[in-house]
Image (cartoon, rainbow, N blue to C red; front, side, top):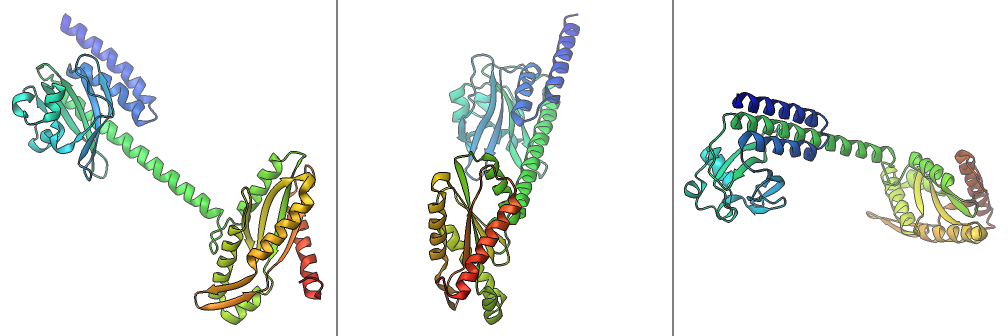
Length: 344
C-alpha cells in the first residue's frame, strides 16, 4: 500500500514537472525543475548541472539545488582533474556510495563531504562534452532503480535544449549579419541608401519643432576621370578613402552613407535657431576633409574636392525623397558655381 501510494505520488509529481518542462523556453527554465525531480528520483539532496572547460581544465557548477546540509554552490569552479565527474567518466562508474574510499584523492569531494555520488555526461549533438548532470549526498544512500534511466533521459533533454539554443543563437547571428549586409555598401563598408533612408525617417519622426536636420549631399567631381585614367580598382580605392575621410570628419551624432555611385550623404542634427550657421560649418568641414592629397596603394592623387550642397529640414518635414531631392539640387547649384569659376 505504501509502495503504491509512493508510486502514485511520484507519478503526479512527474506529471506536474512535465507541464513545467513543456513551458521551458531557456536552459535554466528546463534545468531547474529537472534538478528538483532528480532529487525525488535519486533520493540525493544535492543535484546540479556542470559545464566543463577542457581547455582551461575547469569545471563550473552552472545550476544547483540543495535541500539539506550538503551544499553544492552555483558558480563553484574546481579543477577538472580533481572532480568526481572526471573519475566517474574515465572509470565508467556513474554511481558510488563509497566516495571517501573509492575516490579519496579528490580534494573537492573531501571538502564538500560527499559520500554518495551519481552522474551522467551531457553530450551535445556534435558529440562534444558539454558537462555533467549530477546528484550527491553526504550520507551513504543506495542506488534507486530509476536513477540511471532518469539521469540519461534528463541528460538528453538538456543536450537538446543546448543544441536548440545554439541553433537559435547561430540563426540570430546570421540574421544580424544579413541585416548589416543589406544596409552596408559593399565597397566602402559605409551605410548604404537603404540605411540612409531608414536613418532619415527615424530622425524626422523623432525631431521636435526646435530641432533641425542638416542634409549634406556630396558629389565627387572628377570621379569619372579617375576611373577612366587609372581604372576601376583605383576608383574603388578612392571611394574607400573618401568614405574614411568623411567618417573622420563626423561629429557626435552625425551619420554618413554612400548613396550610390560617386554620391554620399551626411546627416547632422542641430538646433533650428542656429541651423544656417551650422549648415555652412558642415559644408566647410566636409570640403576640407575630402580635399587634398590621396595616396592609394602606389597611386598619388591631388583632389580639388567634391561639390557639397547642404539643406535644412523644415518643421515637421516628413518626405524623405523630397528632402534628398532638395539636397541634390543644392549640390548641383554648388557644382554649377564651381564650374563657372565663381567658387573656389
